[in-house]
Length: 335
Image (cartoon, rainbow, N blue to C red; front, side):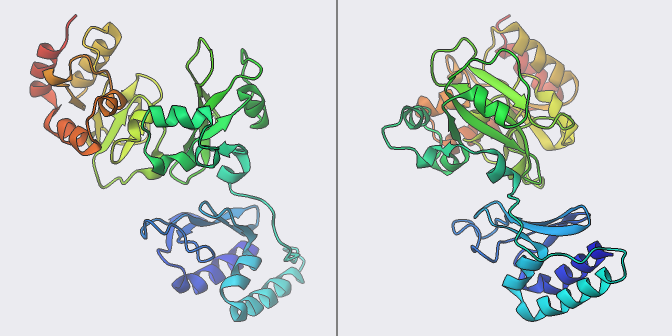
């Protein structure tokens, strides 16, 4: 009964919530009325009301605010809150649902709660992790979404995840993976010091597939699929699989919506075989032109002077499917 009351009062206050939509049962999304949400992009909506147990709670992925539904409602509409309080107490008196305490809930959204590290944009200008980010020319928009872990093993243990073989004091760049509802599903650690393993990807939730960038995807547009998360940061509407099995993206999206962008390695038998397999399975694929010789991937293009717009144009002009893809592929491969 308490969930029904919370839901009904949320719908009553919804006209005051910009971009209010229902994502799925008991999950609602809108622009944060407390911080104003993103000031750069007025279409972004990063506030959520979600169900936990028999109650609704509020959280914002922009400012980090987290409240019980009562406290959230009280900040938006004090008059309506009085009606809500009477309704909840009345229901609690029946004995079916305990009356809520109406105290502030300190539970934070997953992103803020679990990534307890310094973000790259907050590091000193001379910090070596920030220097590494600059050396890769990663767009500044992503600097607040990347983190520095001075001890990767300790960080992983803090997530409650067990992973054998991790070394003490292994300094790494942390790239968090979120699902469509912006819940943390995996993290990738990129070595910043001396390490034989450059990338370590660890799932935080075992029951969901790990793809980077799902929280940024517009399913009404073509979805570009690459291997590395950093490559995806230079493309519009892109996700990364964090391995060479790009076809695995069909766990999330229909193949008709995606374009697979493999690394430009015509002498790599594994890559060549995977592209061949993707073409046979009727995926749209990018076959790199001759002008890309000696350039391996998207980030390599950036480092060689290509702009994101130029890269997007090259991709658009070299995306093929079925017979045309097969013909271009035969000319491209070197094995």
